[in-house]
Length: 221
Image (cartoon, rainbow, N blue to C red):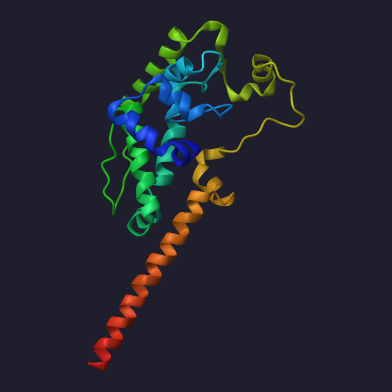
């Protein structure tokens, strides 16, 4: 979400016309770590901008485990509620459009949904091929002395050893159980979600007011 909130315009530019090393340096010069999409797709360009960076390739037990997780996430978004938000919130339309651009950037596929009834019909074959290509490319091209292949099931030890940090007290955090990232955002009061909720309330209030005025005018007439 931070990539969307702070680098939205830059990522749209990169997706449409490309970007330079200086673009990535400007985007992330005050950032300690970056994860998830779309940055994971262009890790190599980020490494050029920050040659001392370390690379962590997070893997799943196998591609079917990864696919099932991705599918659960897509199904969570394939919900009439989110189609409703797109109708009444400019911010929701903007973020869904951004997500579709990111999908095109990494997977080469476009959501076939409309503003009213958005659907995310993921193509299993194409998605798995993209997953394989990504992992294979990282393994082949990332500097071996800067690369950690990491499954979160391994916990703190390999991660902290790779980063040269002490192992924290407590269990390894797990915040996206069952692909519930949208619910997690809502629970934490994420700024974009709150803005969408405000816009929906304003839109519905304006519609209710307009209907009331029309009914009153019709009654008086």
